[in-house]
Length: 470
Image 1 (tube, one colour):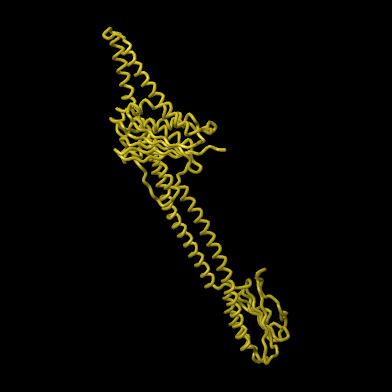
Image 2: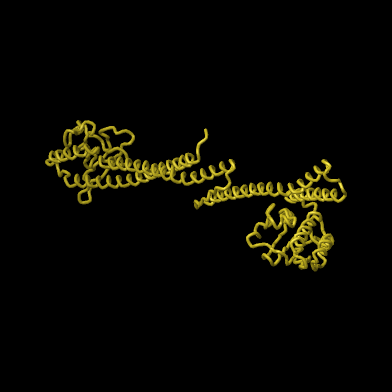
């Protein structure tokens, strides 16, 4: 049977509270009982001393005073019987002078008078109290000489009075009431704390269901002060943002490629239909134009494939020591035609520089950055390319004085299919994939790519990767 987190936490609080309450009740009862027994025993000793003092003051001085002494002991014995105490009095020779029978509430029948027959020996019990019966003997002295003795008997090592029993019963009732009260309070606190824990988790659970249903825009925005719950809520919000971004990328990709593919496909379709209908002759010039459109489509597909491969590339075994200067120089030569046609001034500064990279993958990084610089640099502009060492890092940097990037667009330029200016990048052939490939490959190498740019003043890109090993 499944139980909710709130119920489980409440039951846990209740069990802990019950254990603590019962433990405190048992410990306090045991401690109080021990202390109370010490108190009662002390009170019993004081009471015994008081009885002995009374008997000693009224102890008979000869046979003539014996009747009065017996009457005194009878009254005292009856009083003590009501308190559960048996009184036995002996003379100096150990003959019993008086004994009370608490069972029948009268004097021992065999005690007839001073010097009479059948006197009980010293230590005789006139009643059977069982194994818990306790007797204490006290001597009575006159001028330092023993005149007699008194034997007091009662149940146990101490004797609870009615008031003592009432106090203990009241204490137990109060302790039980306090235990029940604190148990109820602990359950209330448990319910409150469980609600504070289960409530936010329930909100996060509801939010994850909404995410599973495709609702990505809503956020949990939860701060409880509990780090684990706050981290969970933050992770769910991050997941929602990531999925929302991925959904936006899918829509952007659909919109971008529906446009990018539509233009060459429309040109191919219209030209081929015209040729098939005999409206246009399949001249070499027209066929060359159609071939250029197919190359454009092929290049777009290749760029998508490059991005997917770059994102999935995690094989360090393909990395080798590669000459970064030579790779850069080779890429620059591949753009000589475009550079000359735009009359761009390219300056290349380099030193012997080897990097620990995958030559083909990292070649794409250099190619895309040089391609962007040439593409977005105005006619007669300037480009500075450098390859050099810096500590344990190999550095490739490129700076141009072209159209630049706006401050709002800089945080997004490495996003998949992001284009700073839709109309301008379409006109220049941009499709929002090149810089995504750069970022993916550099990240896979454990490197860093940085960009600085101002709109209308050009851009500067800097890539750092690990230098070649020995």
